[in-house]
Length: 206
Image (cartoon, rainbow, N blue to C red; front, side, top):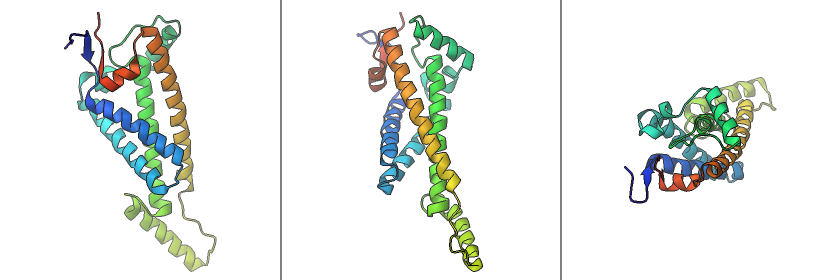
């Protein structure tokens, strides 16, 4: 419903809080780079839990939060971007076509970063929620290597760390592109999109 200021609620509290948690959690995890380990890991857990919640919310949440309302074909997103660059793109009350693609890309990259990080901890460090499963396998390999007298045996999982770091870097590039898109759309449509995500309200459609 439109209020006395002519604004309408667009983003529900779960979307707004989740957006803030993802920003803070990813920033902490990326900057710490594992030092201190506990801060890096708990920031990653917060990101992972938020991503899982947001994906579920994309199917059962309010209309503007649902994937069905903003997931479009790549061609539609490219068309919107071309029109946005010349300030002729139509305004969308919820996510724009390009914004919808970015949401999916960020959720995918953050999920990959989190899952690979948790798997690496469990397999190579024997820590985290997957440690009981992956740590036991790694310990068995270590014991077999000890029996063979392999003093230079290294626990498996190095490839998981490389995936984790690559996914984190891709996420950073997506974040930079996302910020640029938000700034451009804010100027083109003459509205403060970051403030809208904080308040949850945008100017109603004319």
